[in-house]
Length: 115
Image: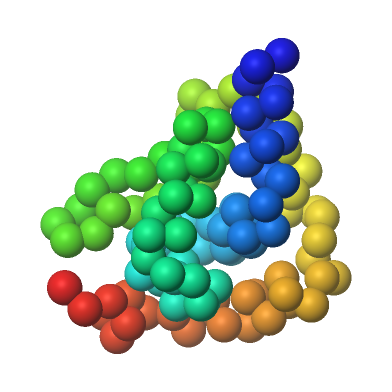
């Protein structure tokens, strides 16, 4: 039951759901790209990513200056996997998700992330 509750709590925040929706559209994103789209402070984005990582929904990997985050399709919990299977079909009509979908294709970390 603890794993189920952890996944549900992770997805109980609108910004964390937006991060998942973003990662469904773009395979990998770094903190500064997510911060740019959501207009949140870097520490806030990092905290959200930590909650998602602890729930087994995302994984991060270091690449030079960036930590790239992607959906955890390998060894997440069965609850997380079920949510990740269904979320692509949910919330697409939400105005905030539609706005993110418009912005995301043009995001280029080389233009917005300053090392």
